[in-house]
Amino acid sequence: MNTVERTKGNLIASALVCCAVVFQPTANAADANANLEPNRDQPMINPAASAQQATTITLLGTKGGTPDPSGRRAQSSTLLTVNGVHYLIDAGDGVVPRLIKAGVPPYTVRKVFLTHRHLDHTAGLTAFMSQSWFNGWFFHDKYYMDRSTTKPFVEIYGPPDTSTLFEGSMKFLSVLARDTDAPAFGTMKLPPEVFSVRTIEKPGAFFNDGTVKVTAIENTHFGIPMPGPIAKNGDFSFAYRFDTPSGSVVFTGDSGPSENITKLAEGADVLVSEVLDFKLLTTESREGVGITKAPNPEQIRFRMEQQHLSPEEVGKMAAKAGVKLVILSHVVPGDVSPKYFVEFVAAVKKYFSGPVILGQDLFQYSMVKQ
Ligand SMILES: [Zn+2]
Ligand SMILES: [Zn+2]
Image (tube, rainbow, N blue to C red; front, side, top):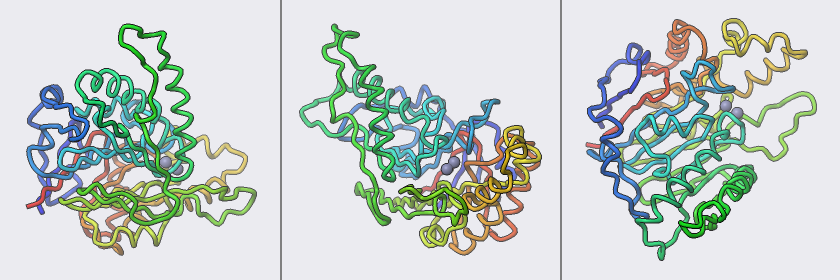
C-alpha cells in the first residue's frame, strides 16, 4: 500500500511526520468539480479523487468544543472518500463551507455517520441537509435525474439520539420548503425519500455498500463512572471503523481511554483520534481559561479527563492496537501556540513509534491500493 498526504493550507504536520510525501494538489477545486456527472444511482465522482482507486481522509473541521473565533478550525467533521464516493463522519458547525473549500459540493455527500449528539459534532447537520435538499435534490437532480427510481438521497446513521436531531432538522426544512416560494418550479415540498435516518442500537457491523464496511462500537465518552446526578440517560457515543479496499480507518469519536476502541482499531491503517490536554486548556487557551472560574473546576476536570483522550492515552491505544498511523483531530485546546502542538505529537510518540500527524482543517491523507 502506498500512502501520500496533501493539504491545501499551511501544514504543521508535514514537519512532524516521517516516511510520507507532501505535495500540493495539481487541480484547483473549481476545475475538479466542472465535470461532475450527476447520476443518482452512480454516486458522485470527483475526478480529482477518482484518478486512482484511493481512500482519502479529509479533515474538514478539527476543533473540539466551541467554534474557533479565529476561523482556523471548524467544529469536528471528517470526510472519507473511497474510490470517489464520499462518507461524512460528524457534522459540526462549518461543515458546509469546509466541504466547499475542499472542492466537494455538499450535495454530493450522501452518507453521513454521526458519532454522538454533542453540538461540536452535529451543529452543522441542518445546514448540510439544507444544501442536500435545496442545491442537490431540488435544483441539481430535479433537472437531471430520473426520479422513477427514487431512493433516499442522503442516508444518516448514528446513535439513537440521531433520530431526534433528524426530526428537528426535517421540521426546520419543512418550513423552508413551502410551495408558495417557488410556483414556477412546481412543488418544493420535501418528499420523505430525500433523507433517511437509521439509528444504531447495538455495536457491530451495520453498513456495507459493497465497497465500504462500517463497524460501530460504544466508546467511553458517555460511560464514565461519574459521582453526582449525571446519569447515562440512554446516551450512546460510537467509534467507527471503515474498512475500504485501500485500507482501514478508525475514528475514535469523543472518548476516554477505551478497550473497545483498541480492539476495533486492531491492525487498522489509520487511527483518527480526538485529543485533549486539560492542563493546557486551563492555562494557555482563551476558551478554556474560564473553566478555572467555574464553581466546580475539579468536577469538570474529572469529567473531561475521563471523557476525552490525553495525547499519552492516544499513544497507548495506538501502540496496543498496532495501527500504522495516528492523525490527531478534534484538538482541544485548538487555539494555542503551534509549539504546543509539537508537544502533543511528542506525547503520543512516547508510547507509539509510528508516524503522528497533528491535524489541521483541510489536511488530506490518501491510501492507494497497489
Ligand atoms: Zn467533541
Ligand atoms: Zn462529545
